[in-house]
Amino acid sequence: MSLQGYFDYNATTPVCSEAINAFVSAAKSFANPSSNYGLVKPVGNLLAEAREHVCRLIGCAIDELFFTSGGTESNNWALKGAFLHELSASPGKPAHIIVSALEHSSILEVVNYLERAFGCEVSRLDPDREGVISVESVRAALRPNTRIVSVMLANNEVGSIQPISDIARLTRSRNIHFHVDGVQAVGKIRVDVGMLGMDTLSFSGHKFYGPKGCGGLYVRRGVKLEPLMHGGGQERGYRGGTEAVAMIFAMGAAAKLADEQLDQNLQRFATYTHLLRQQLVQKIPSIIFNGPQNLSMQVPNTVSICVPGIRAEALAAILDNLNGIQVSLGSACSNNKTMSLSHVLVSMGLSDEEVKSTLRVSVGLYTQEADIHFFTDAVANAVSILNRISKPVSEDHVLTT
Ligand code: PLP
Image (cartoon, rainbow, N blue to C red; front, side, top):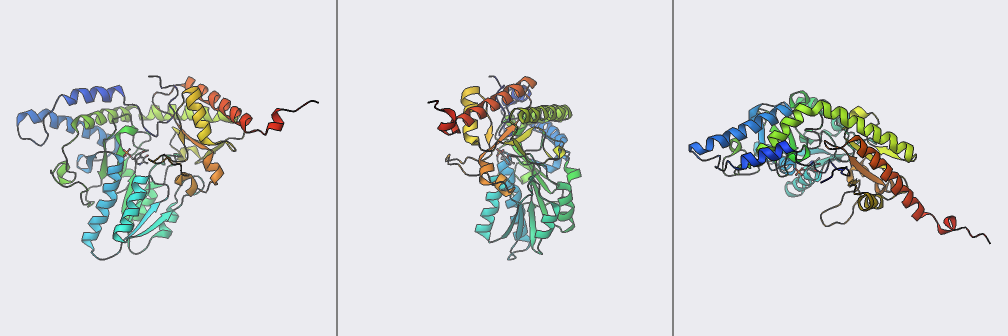
């Protein structure tokens, strides 16, 4: 399969051959890791090896890592687990949660649920125009009963990187649980949980060339969480369910590769997205880039583009049908396929028109320099087609009578 037209690496990444090979070899070791006979030893070794690779990738200790089914489960666990622990420690006191409006639905909808089901108070913080949550806005939202703060490390739509270590210093000084959704950061930028200082961090294997349905949660030593999945006693009693051994081993292989190649990938992606921006500006002078203007505050593989006056849906459809290019709409598409405006772009203060004209472009491991030229030519061509279509008839057909 050609990946020349694939510009949606933030949605998911192709599984790398290292992970596929690891999956195939591990799938042959079929014993249940919880059994007690000798057949289990190789399976235990596979899990241990994968754990080591993932721990190295995010800089945590072996006993701080828990495997899960992915980012959604990890986010659910961190927030519900911290909330339920707090509830059992201080029953009857309403908790206050601070959450950024930039978050993925697996954070926002959990917070909505906790508000609805348990009556907790919620503050939703808007980012600035560049998609960044300031530590001052978190500080200003604090209340005596604030128990949880949740801010993502890197945003999935505009790639803005948040000031996590500053927020962590603040929450630590107030003994508040700080959860960070790291799904769009782990494997893409250097993540060191010790330096960043959060209490919990979620990640997902399919965002760094591992399989889908596999991820994990870092839980800082000493931090207390109620389990989400009860039963079975796996993951030291904190995440019941027979381990997905082959998937975990495959994710471990992908984590090893991501760790080893991170610096060179960062460099390469930054070069490609720089070229992409440069060429788009030349070919479409009216183009606008959403997100941080200081590119060191943006994940280097992500570019959010807005072509004023052009509907992103139409642009994406032409790119897909004419050029076999896949990009993501800035506006999210829910399961029932009804379109709604991207809550991320709206929270950043973009107008409805700007949101409707925004596309997310993300490059990855299999992107080549030639693909950038192919992409920018195709976008320029699609924009000129759409401009021609939308021109009033009288401008196109001037009658010379
Ligand atoms: N958090 C963010 C920021 C994401 O982008 C995603 C997936 O796109 C998730 C969480 C959910 O992760 P998963 O697909 O592993 O459930």
